[in-house]
Length: 264
Image (cartoon, rainbow, N blue to C red):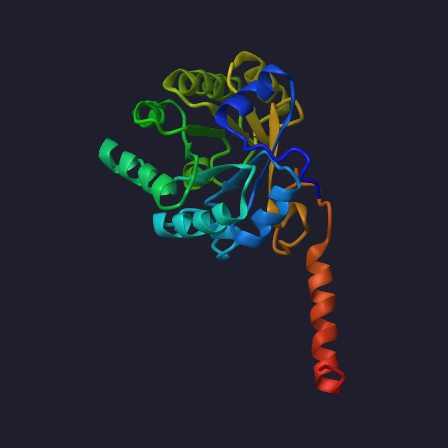
């Protein structure tokens, strides 16, 4: 861990990283202690994702996550951060209903949760929402490609952009969202060559997850890269540790020592 570069990260810093060809490093986490640890490692951006539905709650997808749940976890993560920029997902149903509902919920994430930006899934169909939020001074991160909130429409968690028609739509969506005011775009589960084209076309940073190495930055889920998630590991994830095995070993030792009267 290092506190050498402890200056608070801002939107301007993230934009400048793209201009300076400096990679942006991001992680998704959901609790105070995890946030505190990765913040001390000088992570640039932390996302409180609606992936907590699957990773934290054990649901089969992200659709059941509520605003109150996102706010609860965002508040916890916020307390652990001093340097990293904090983004919170707007869960399914929190911005699709109407303009006033979207603005109200985004404001809640900022005022109650402490987020510095909100993330929305969708292409040109949410461009008006993105524009409305930015006009009210709310930083917006867009999310296109494989979109977990569209899992039923997409027929599952499948790589996007394989056909020229879909690839063109993803590129069009990226440009539209940039014009609408998004300051950053997450590219999830799309072909690396498409992600590369989008990254070079856009003026705003792109953050990849399962989208190749040419994005302006990368993001992984805390439980995935540490090997805590024992149910499923996406093919694009690199495990930097096997923490689940360490927890299992430690727990078995504890159980054994209590039963044998060794502890305490």
